[in-house]
Amino acid sequence: MKSKLILISVLLLGFFAGVSRGEWVQRNWDGVCFDLNANGGSGPGNEGTNCRVYVKNNGHVNSEVGIHNYAFNDCIYMTNPSRWSYTYIWSSCDDALWIDQMQVLTTWCNIFNSGNGCQTYGVDNRKGWCISQDYRDGLGHWRYFTPSGCFKMLRLGKPGHRDSRVWGYQWNYRRALQEEYDSQLADISKRVKECEADPEKKSCEDVVDEVFKLYEELDNQGWVTTDPEEDDIDQNSELGEEGKKVAGLYEQEVKFLKKQILQLKKADKPEQN
Image (cartoon, rainbow, N blue to C red; front, side):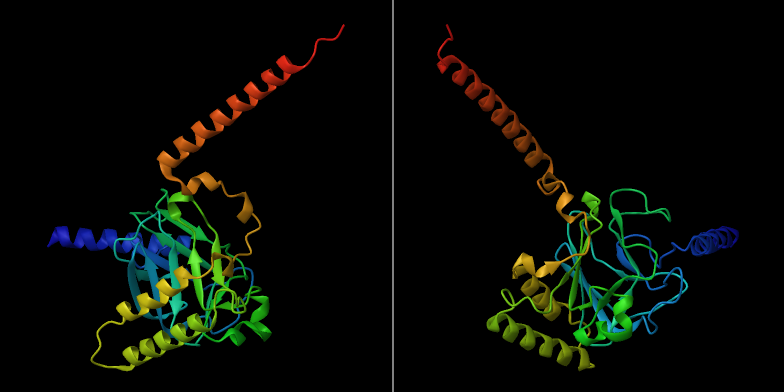
């Protein structure tokens, strides 16, 4: 009995310590967490959503009904997430969700989010992101709080690369969303809504995975981010350790060839009298 009381006390102390730092999450590993609290003033109002929100990482789709503006971050548990994968976020309806900051936690992370399995996205201020199936939710009063507008889907950078970028898929990017994609997306979205409305269905993740796969197939130029450092990311970070070694050897070979060319040019140059 005494050991149980000690365990409960430790858990409660950890909970309140985390809340006081503003960084406590429901489960501080294997999850994506949402901070809906604006800092420096109020947010847009009605930041939360009652829609089911889906996330995908490392091939697994998970979801939760509603993301709310709690005193601590509201999280969605993820099955076996990878720090080397993008995290995709999608909502099935048009009850807009406004997000100030997000965290992806793919390994055990303490309240300081140490380790390269954890990544924070965004700044604790009054600017954030909006997810909705209705782009008009990002207009009017909300435009100040979500300058990029509302997106149908978000994509978060890979924690293993310390990539804090957030992309949204453009509504008006027609090169990718051609008629066949529009038709497929409308059909799958209809099936998702039917699945969610069926009381006998315990899960709709398999149908929603078709939505994620469809977006993964689309032209990458349709994804936009307001991060000014987007073009400064080290491209070799996507290559892995073996790729970096090959790239390094290639660079050395190019330097050697340039040196050889210079020597040949000098040898070909006629001597001056």
